[in-house]
Image (cartoon, rainbow, N blue to C red):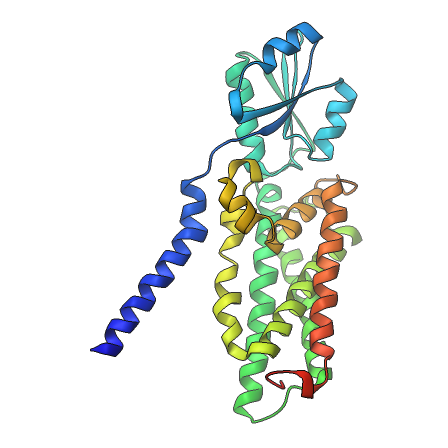
Length: 305
């Protein structure tokens, strides 16, 4: 009876945690400070920026600067007031932010036409997040299988095997998403910039997972396995649509947002955007940190795996 009660309690605790980090994110989502550029004469721009309340953060600028801000993802849309008024959005921006801004602007300026730069297909919009999830789950499964197989055989996972697993996962988990991208939309670019970015994502994830599995054994799966649930719930949103608590506690650090938004820019031809540079630094740091732990001599490793 006691064991059954503890099992029920554990289930309830897990449900609370998952509810907070998944369903809770969606349930509390709402626009707050969505960045939008407006191109208009000063007097007219002042009238426009008086609307929107806390949902919109306006930036009055020139047409060329507004387009650059959109490419750099510093704004999620541009309102160009003229005859007719034009709402400019980008396929390289997170679809959640694009949809929210487009709805707000077309409601605020009835009859405005919508122009999309760097247009993205349905596959192009969903692929960056999907690739991140596939890389995480594929490399995680490989790490867990290696650890379980080694333990069943009573063998130590040697340095060479750990490194081979990381980089083999990187190669294979680049090939698998690449195949899916071609299957989903043959027009999606698969140049060396895209493949190289995906390889970095896959190897960084594999290295971090391998490091945690080495330090904590299969116990690390309790964190690593459900962590991918943060991808659609958090990385699939822009921060201005998240509750401030979730923005700080989850969005600020989840690796999926760096891989997802960086790949989105590379796929849609805005590889010079600042989020790509940030993603390269973050993913590179994760890869380096994971490799350092994997290279630590056995006597310094808690699990000695």
